[in-house]
Image (cartoon, rainbow, N blue to C red; front, side):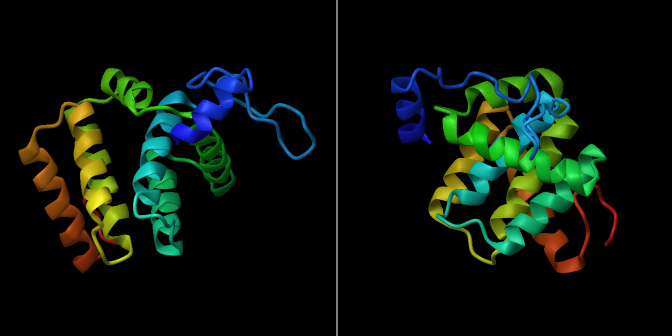
Length: 173
């Protein structure tokens, strides 16, 4: 993340500059509709969590895609566009503040709790909790001003949800 940001800076692109607000080009090079900045901020952070252990597994991808579709009421095509845009945005990011700031302003405590549960769902999707994954979920939660007790609750709910098939919104799958 930091190395790509330095490369972008040296290449004349300012890191952290929003790229999705103007629309993302489609396969024919024409501008598609803009990606919602709240959706983008959440997806960038979730991708960072997914990649924290060095791999973005198929289980993690499936969890991310299902979560984005369910929580943001997106079609499969919109989810793929969002993830592709978030991947590009993530490659240019130098920190998490820009994204957590968007969510801090737009999300209430309940939405932040759901995001924390989704982060833990991603961490647990491959069956193992890497130290860096644990650190990153705590860091993002701190930037979102979630108290440690909330994070513990989110982790427990995600863990229980994996056992029972319950989704982050409390319904069973």
